[in-house]
Amino acid sequence: MAPAAASAVLLSLTIYNAQGDPYSAGHFPGCMWLGLTGMWCPGCGGLRATHELAHGDIAAAMALNPVVVVLILPMIAGGLLLWWANAWRGKPFPRIPLWAAIAVPVFLGVFWVLRNIPALEPFLAP
Image (cartoon, rainbow, N blue to C red; front, side):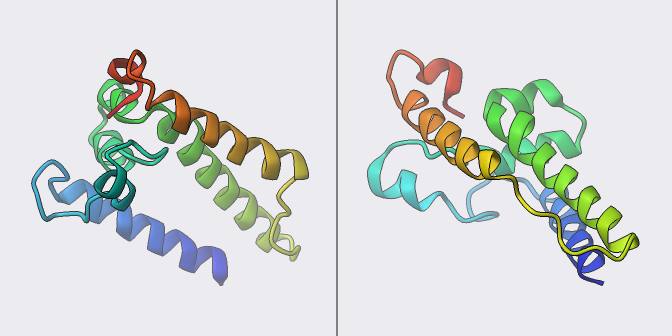
């Protein structure tokens, strides 16, 4: 039941994101971190990247936030599939390996710093 609910929520959010225009003001809330500090967070551009992926434009999505496209969304999809498989077999929610629980936040922290270095902003900023 829980994987079905999570799938329904993710699907409905993706459809909402695909139908709207994330480039117009007011459709989505702005990034609070960007508003407070003027610096990009690791998720900045993620909603627009998801919007572009829903429309089949992988290049535009990669330009907005490559980490969301290459790491975060595949992890969400893979985790959801694993959750479905475990639920089908009567097993509990899949455990997150310790190495992933450490490596992913460290990687996101490094990306956070790199995307705010002025020389790298043209390549990593949304």
